[in-house]
Image (cartoon, rainbow, N blue to C red; front, side):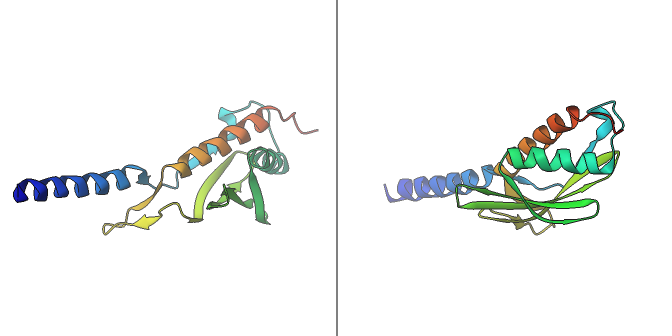
Length: 142
C-alpha cells in the first residue's frame, strides 16, 4: 500500500509539472508583417504608425513611449498581467518584439530558449489583427 501511495504521489507531481509547463510556449520575436500583404495602397510611415497605434489602443494597449520608427506598447490585463512590446515600422512593414512582462511566467531554459505564457501570443494576435484592420482602412497618401 505504501509503495502504491508513493507511485501515486509521483504521478501526481509529474502531472502538476507537466500541466504547469503546458501553458508556456517558446518566445520568438518573428512577428514581422509586410504591409503589401494587407493592402495594395502605398502608405507613408506616419500612416503605418497611426494605424498600428489606433489598432492597439482599440484593444487595450497603451502607448508607453515613442521614437522615430518605433512605438513601445503596453497591455495590462485584469490588473495582474502586463506585457510590453516594441513595434518597429516603416512604409513597407512593421515588426513586434517582446520587451518585458509581469506574471506571464517568462523564463529562459538552460539551452537559451525563452519561454512565456500562451496568453502572450493571444494578445499579440489581437494586436496584429487590429493593426491589420486599421491598415486596410487607410486611404492612399495625398
